[in-house]
Amino acid sequence: MPPVIHVAGTNGKGSTVAFLRAFLEASGKTVHVLTSPHLVRFNERIRLAGKLVSSRRLNQALEACEAANGGAPITFFEITTAAAFKLFAEVKADYLLLETGMGGTYDASNVVKNPLGVVITPVDLDHQAFLGNTIGEIAVSKAGILKRGAKAVFGRQRDEGRNVLARSAARLGITPLILGEDFDGRNEDGRLVYQDNDGLLDLPPPALLGPHQFENAALAIAAVRHFDLPVSDADIAKGLRTVNWPARLMRLEGTLPSLLPAGSEIWLDGGHNAHGAAALSLALREIDARHRLPLVMIVGMMNTRKPADFFAPFAGMAEQAFGLTIPGEPNAHPGSAIVAGASAAVIAAEESKSILNALAAVAARGKPVRVVFCGSLYLAGHVLHQNGTPRPKSFSGCSETSW
Image (tube, rainbow, N blue to C red; front, side, top):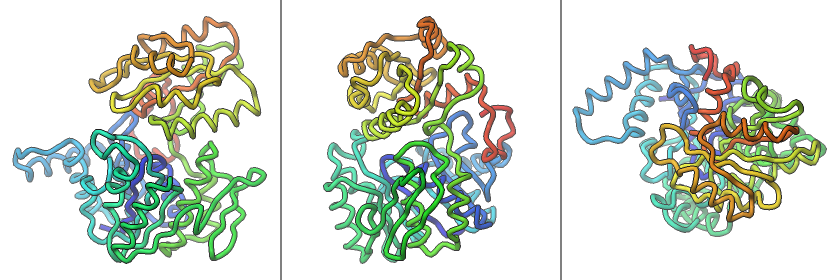
């Protein structure tokens, strides 16, 4: 396989990978990518030299892996990761951007012995049933992708996680660069100002919305510079303008907005834990400061997360919430559990049977409103499908009319 950049963390993995891909492709390099989960089609997880894998080629790889496995026990993520690695080895590319599925140490992606570099985004509470009940325990798992001889860049960390990651790196002889200590990126007058020991860059703002994306972009820029990738400052600027990553503070156009009163907005975000909710609430406050509208949340969540923790950052901000049971997901919270979580944050809430039913209830208000769908990337996929959102150019390898 081509040189690997391995990415772990709690939040921001996908966005950081999207920035890295945009920078490398702006420099003319071809890039393989493995991310998860997908939104509408599984093919979205695997990008071969810049294009989404075709269903025919994907099926061939999966069948070969199933035959090699010989019926032995294997998880969905393990066999699909094996298929992705097979494809990455068969198709030439300059780099492979590899995102962990969950954790790090025991993640199926963590078979790469000599990555070019490792990126660990902010570590916070998530998947506690599998990774541990404290940030320190979770950080131990994330640190499992560190490898002796591979450079490392860390996102901004809480003290507990930062200390665990730094000790793990030291044991391997690694001196990581850490956001907020060795480099930083911030919004100054609508521009991204990046600074490290090599100097300062004045760059365009990232095309991905939200204040948290300035830090995700800075993390990717630090990786480019620290890993000595063949990317110029002009390539970084171009990548910031062209980067695309669906369902991350994405404003919808199409079928669903037309169901609401004129002047309404619908936003979609895949934030699904307390850390992601805090970032989303801050971004929505900035949007509201520019154009005030009542906020209504339509939320579906998996049962590995706590709805009350997710709603806490929206207390005093959201006027109403609707709880949905994500269709076709046996491990989804029932809508009633989501309503209870909203009520704990003193947000008026009710259960709804579907996306369309929830929007009909919002439309009955008869006034412009700002709706945000959030709580799960699985819900985001259903929303995109229901909306008939045309795929962006970066999904040009997808053969369907919607994704």
